[in-house]
Length: 68
Image 1 (cartoon, rainbow, N blue to C red):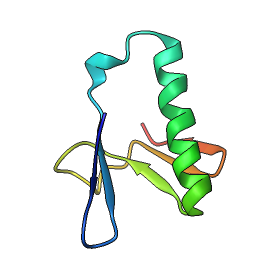
Image 2 (cartoon, one colour; image 1 turned 135 degrees about the vertical axis):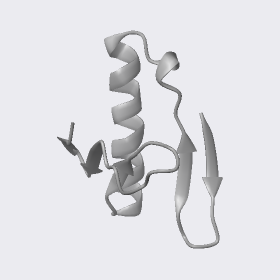
Image 3 (cartoon, rainbow, N blue to C red; image 1 turned 90 degrees about the vertical axis):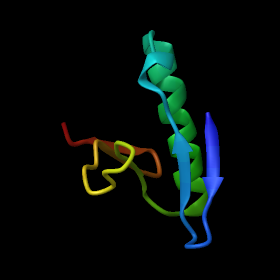
Image 4 (tube, one colour; image 1 turned 45 degrees about the vertical axis):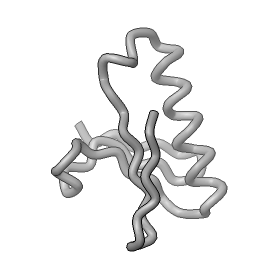
């Protein structure tokens, strides 16, 4: 996974669906997103590249909400 720290204060991470074949892969991604959210005390959104308005899931601390 690549992470990009932008001047706007935004962090973007590249996530490739093909890298997630097993339930453990999905759980590892959620653990990472929860860690980022908890550490920064901010919600973390997962959206397709180029479509930030299409939120697929939102992580706030340990809470995960799916929007698909």
